[in-house]
Image (cartoon, rainbow, N blue to C red):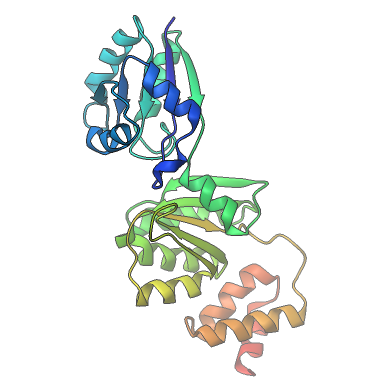
Length: 272
């Protein structure tokens, strides 16, 4: 049986293509690409002359069977616009279909924006939950965040520039003012990695509207024992300096994180 190769491609810097990926793309008879125009830039850079065929959300219903017909005869490589195929793109449909037909599916690992952001976040990496793109609208977005707010694992998700501020507001509302890393334009010329509280990220991107691809890495729920008073006071001082929350909002948020009663926290805030 022929093989389906899942070839990870650069998420920005073209030098991130691996030697194995380069060889595979040169040797296969055909490459299925999410956007042939984007992929042509990469192939031209490395002088890869393998034919391209489009495979995306708008043609996957009809194109999957045609690619399976190709796999009946020859190998095929699948690439996405950037990063690892079948992650947040229609490639998983082809993978499922190829496996059902008995074809071997072989990953050629490489760049991945969620993993790159996680590794550079400074947050725990031993256990994490990948959420993909957050829902577009606030109500389903909050519903998803409520489902994961009590989990201790680091949360990783993708977001678009025009929805970032709304999503950060919902994250702070549901999750509390946790630590977050906002990784923007990874490996590209204007790469930016911002680490701090969610309120800090909101303030920064309110002043400097974001552009490009964005990955969010958010601290999981703190399931440790109740915070000490000194720890709580330090966080209160920091959040009051940020000025992003009212005393009642801050008390409610910290009560969910610290193990302290909301009324006691509110009294501490008023005495600052």
